Length: 249
Image (cartoon, rainbow, N blue to C red; front, top):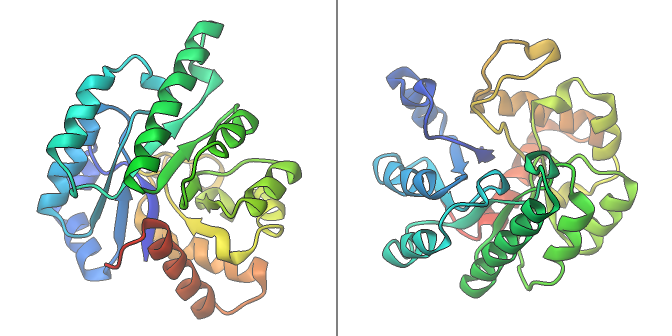
């Protein structure tokens, strides 16, 4: 299995030897996305130690003031040591002024330019800004685009399908009726699974830190929604992830 969106760095659980050995034994791969320059470097260095890690580099909209020249240096000094650009995007929640949102857009465009030039997949954050994000992404020739933690409406779904973008769903799928209805409208060919871990979920997962070992439960719920066997959905989600990263593991 492949967890399509995690943050492997910076949490004690993810450095626990029992957890690490369990991941290796289970043959689970993690796409670890970055949020700033430091975590981009962390991903690259951690991937040298753990072959189950698939490192992405990028600057999250929350950190739109990060030095872009430093990011470019990370890219140039670590060629072929990362597999995608992410987590990138827009988020009005982190903006107190219109100018901050404009700065987020400038950063987002730069990240997409890097991805397009290097033919890399992108992992996108689009909270409170999904319509803007879709319109911007459509300006670029990027084959493999993932809208992580997808939370759009029917109009957004149509645009996602028309542009052949991927969407990913996490443990929220196990308890949210609204998300279940959304998934029902999306072809299985465009779906990935994620945990966004380490993260504390609400409702039935209150105070429980997420981990990739929740993936089988998410896939099982998908198989119920799509009325297909667990094995068929499991294999399809795995092949989707391979196509998204454009690499065999």
